Length: 520
Image (cartoon, rainbow, N blue to C red; front, side):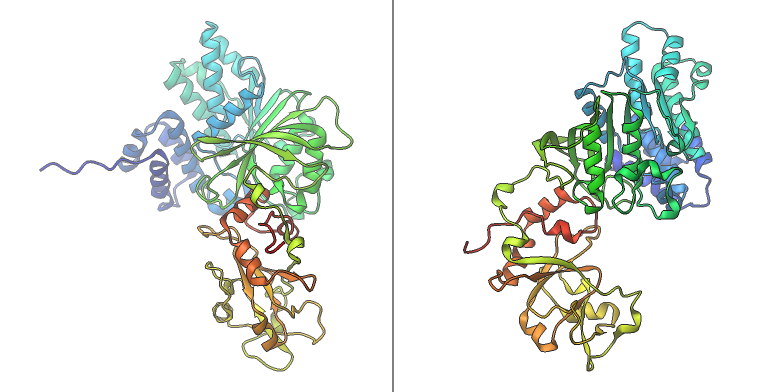
């Protein structure tokens, strides 16, 4: 009797299954296991999955195994999230569109990781140089001179070089001894290098991690001109890259989209536009399905360094596409970048969204109470001098407010508060979840807290994971209408174009385009 055929799996499904195999065996050594895969020493189940992958996806699988076995905490500390082949191809295409010459330019990946960019760049260089009839020795010499990468993790640096060497031998027939002597990725911390020249362009996916003060890189003062409060590794890499490149040099990165509208990136937005022309900002679709273990909106950012920095930044335009995790894209047109450090708004159906919160008669305020710092003020029961605490769980995905549902979350749902405390909301208002979780169907989840509830208890206090939208004038639109407008898909999509982080800044929420004010 014939056995049923093996199911057809997509490349990303194959990689996911390979990674799952190794995650079930966390005691295995990351570099040993990954190099064994390169030597075709794979367990039968893994070998069958690898056999269905092309070279680019096979490389991605090997690097992903290393990442899985290095452990989640180590991976997060390094910001080691590797780019799938479709997005790599898209970024290289974008770089070519804006003038990067792979045959003549000197290219660098400052955080080479699993060689996601180094190997495809090398493939393109070899193709172009073989068309010039160069022999393998000359091509190897050119690769050593014109392609460089750095990686802070020694195992990853070794793996990246091994991946490049395998590519040259197995895909292009290079002599193993010739390819084996080529090590373009060095073990080094790019951020520790003050004078970093030697490349015409930079391409890559730098690590992203919000830094505490104890995690800041050496000579952090070099990045003071982009610091609006807290630094992120990716913003530091962009700033360092612009300092290192010559005038006309192109920086093409895949990075989180949080800089697009986040208030703490005001100085970053301004500074990079002073130093470089913004050529493209492309949103990557699928915030939880592109990078392993990441719930983060990401984008493609392409910059060209100016010959002389600007003093003031005027309104300009940049190209903008919407890109899938497989690299497929649809052209969105252009994005208008406002003067100075104001948030960027990527293309969308803004003609139907002509207003903002202020025109609806509201302002945003982050919930006052931080539960783990003010636990002594929380209680299970109602009593004199206590008002209801609004947890994020009280805001339903269906746009309803349910105090009991929120109360079940922690069973501490009453707060001690002086009668005249300014942080008590005393009118009908709108509660918005401040963070959005993996798989959440709405980017903005809002619900009316009705006046009847507020008056019954003399006011409400919101927990820190809630944003309250409070009326600022007597003719404010009813809270129910505002909540309904905020829950519209097009409003959530607009926020995505302005804010790439899971957390919604209150000040940014005040700038999100909304539908026309009812009756006006």
